[in-house]
Length: 383
Image (cartoon, rainbow, N blue to C red):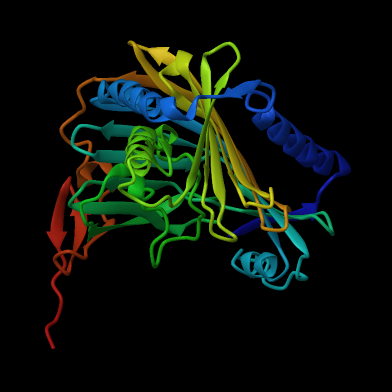
């Protein structure tokens, strides 16, 4: 819902590009200033296995985890994509098609994870309206954003969102949906954010902080796989399907792993593991063989109760032509681990529902009204 439309000031545009510069440079500070030297190839399998054990032992100490994430995100759209995005903003349908559009959002995620049983709860809320900025005309379109609640387990997923709002953003009515979920590890997908009928909202990077322990898959899984594959290759039991290089910093505290797929046009990954932080990944780069960067993530870890957890993280993403796609930062706070979680954490009573709101159970093909903490089935006429 469009609530204002105005000319962006020169100061605002300068601020945007200042933020871009800070994000890009800060993401390069650690990984691009450390000197590394090659590790003896014969030592690589054992070293990778050792780091895998250390980082897994760190994560295995986490049985439950809760906290808050503050995020700032700017996504850039160009050409047809920019025009299509702006058309979805209520009130901006008649606007001239932009050549380049920036979507700026800020908000918080409150999360609770039962890590042992792979259950999670996240409450999403924006701290300010979403801004769509036409970088050519300097026009800004401000759109209301809605709160969302999400619960995910191995057996089901639930999402709740406002489906009726006042012009000032006051929530009039909410709708929750439950649907089945195939059992899957936490790293295989993000929490449900946008589903058919829900308001448009891009998946926010970093919304599941467990993802900071992964490089595509959990880092301990990847390191173990690399170690075993290299060992079998050197024994002549398998053919080489990728190239692996391991480097060690001159002071001996950090390691850099390079993985390249020899196939044409396949990206490769470079990540840095900090031995003083439990060998967790502090920098991850994805590139094409021609050197074009697809993305870079820089994460700072800190120690709490003898466990290393992410504290801040920055993401920069690029298009295939090197143009900027996204810059985001997340800051984690109020974190606790291994505490008891209330019994209702992963139930419908923790979805923000109020009397009169609707609940749709797609696993049972039934609809309900939420009333007094209970679900009252809505009778449907059978044809």
